[in-house]
View (cartoon, each protein chain N blue to C red):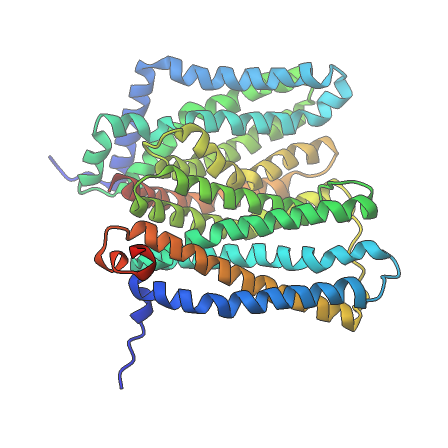
Length: 227
Length: 245
């Protein structure tokens, strides 16, 4: 067998994780349903006034996206950890960082991308104007991968621990605050008649920064957890 | 004569050194607290704008400064432990965490007490308040992660990585919160920009020094307990006077 190129490896890991997820579709759907449910609870909690709902829509959707992505984090490595695949991956001569990046991308495609795609429907529930919905989707598209990347570090650190699910949220949520601020800020800027470019640029900067560092840090965290 | 710079990086030698050092930090800390607070509460003049309520700064400001510095020191020790695999560094990091969290909490608490008469609200979503709250969350995350891992070596390394990631994030979080705050509302009341009275300065610096000394003394005390706990099965611990009794 010829030696895999780095990107061949990346594609392989992504394809494998997607295939595994497609065999168990319920896992993907629960995250999505959770997201829709949390967003739908807000109007019931704060009242149905359209003005207020329009104003808080961006923030509500972002907080819900944050919670939904926390929900699916413990699954990122745990199944592979239990059946021993993760150990094999670490023994493989290929770069663990690249494999972790593949798992992050797959995780985002299964938990982040569906949120981006369903967000416009939820935006309509909150009577958001069309341009705000567009910016919301763009902001989620830039921001949700960052959530998966930071989350990967937390998931790797808490691998196999008791109560890992709650713990990972405790570790990761404070670190995701900048994403929340600028993600919701972009939507609010458009609603207020301002330009969202600065917020979106910062989200893009976070994405690049996280893309460079987080797979490596998460790989180190995996090594610590698997020792 | 060759000096062994790493003599005290071994827990067994540091245990004794820490025990000798603690009184040298603890007593000055206590004396400076009393002196600083006396100056703060009785000598320093009443503020023209904030009247008596400003006196909370003698506790609030040192606590805030300490809470931030201690996180950096904690992350520094954690990084040392991770890079050079020195066990003592990791122990120092875990010894500092509760003190840092305590100072962050005191800072928030006294800030709320000051905010009520000054701003008319216990809590304002001011940039500094919010970032202090997030700092407290980071401390709690560090402590929680360490508490939930049973193997101490893994706990040290995992929490060290978390502390490093956190310290990289701290400036990003700080500026995010600041920009978010200016986007949402105008700047809230700032601390008066006028130069401080000499007695106020003296009082504050004395309490600040006291807080530093206290933090060091407490961290050393705690690290001694951690050393004893981790090294309980070793010969040198069993031969200690206080263990034999």
